[in-house]
Amino acid sequence: VFLANWVKHPIETGALAPSSKQLAIEMCNTMNIGPDSVVVELGPGTGPFTEVIFELMQGKGTYIGFELSEEFIEKLRNRFPEHKDDFLCRSAEDITKVLKERGIKHCDCVLSGLPWAIFSKELQQSILTQVTKSLKREGRFATFAYLQGLVLPAGQTFRALLSRNFVKVERSKIVWKNLPPAFVYRCQVK
Image 1 (cartoon, rainbow, N blue to C red):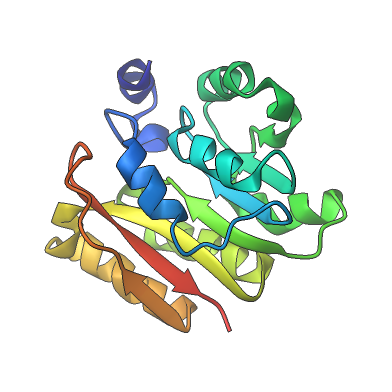
Image 2: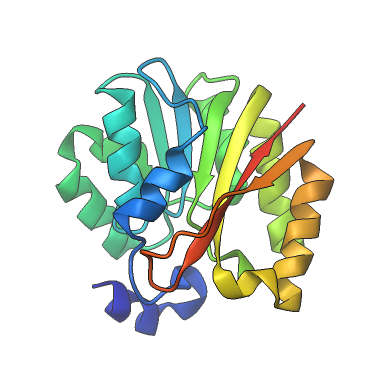
């Protein structure tokens, strides 16, 4: 399914395989997700991060997932039927609009599985602006990059963009049990 979706929509999908459980755990680590959290997920794909998020939320809190692939939305709704209305076929550029529509002022954290490296700088900044506007004071943002992102110019440019948008940017250890190996950027707003 993941490979087929990538072949049909390479710009939207950006990866050939879903993220590993180990990367999902690393993504959620230090995000302070709990039963009272408001969590936004960008690009949940087939749900590897979503599964860990729901475990940490313990069936409570508020979750909103933004996914452009209708095929992935259908799979997510079948996999997590109790959250079928929480998976939206909307752009990540609509975060603040959707929160407002749902009567939510800010979220606690945003986790992203978006393929940043294939986005234009303008789209990257537009989404990051929405992320920072949506987060509560000292809110957290996590996204991942593949290991080659440490040395490629596009990866270095994205890291600099994170530093311009957040007061704190940390990098996790490398998650070797992922295809390809990856690491997590953990960011915080003021």
